[in-house]
Amino acid sequence: MRKLYSDVTAESTATTGTGSVTLAQMAGWARFNDRFSSGDRVYYSIRSGSNWEVGYGTYNGSHVLARTTILGTLNASTWTSGGSALSLSGTSVVRAVAPEALLQAFIREEVSFV
Image (cartoon, rainbow, N blue to C red; front, side):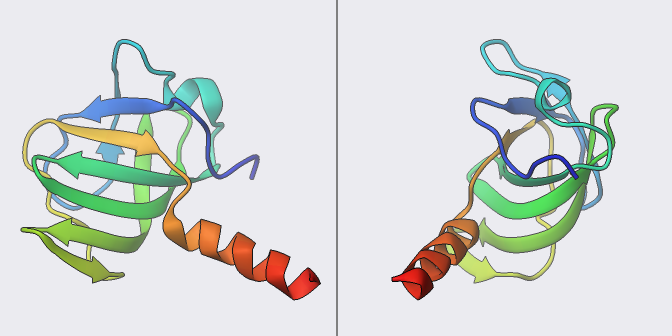
């Protein structure tokens, strides 16, 4: 595993349903393939309409991201921690992110050293 997150990395997907997403280049953004290698674990967010999913997945090196662990979803304005993958409908945007759960883990580690 090389890394978990990167800056300015986003792609679109026309994938529907709750499975792995096939990624397509978006102008003005780095591609997942530019920043990640096959087998890398990736923190991501997906925006599908007004709904969101945050999680970490496994990138296969060929423009597919498996949605391995769902950290939370915002669906119909309701936040749910953990749970099931958001059912995607039509074009969605997938971004590499540093989610709240990761940042809280860093803060806990830093506090334990003080």
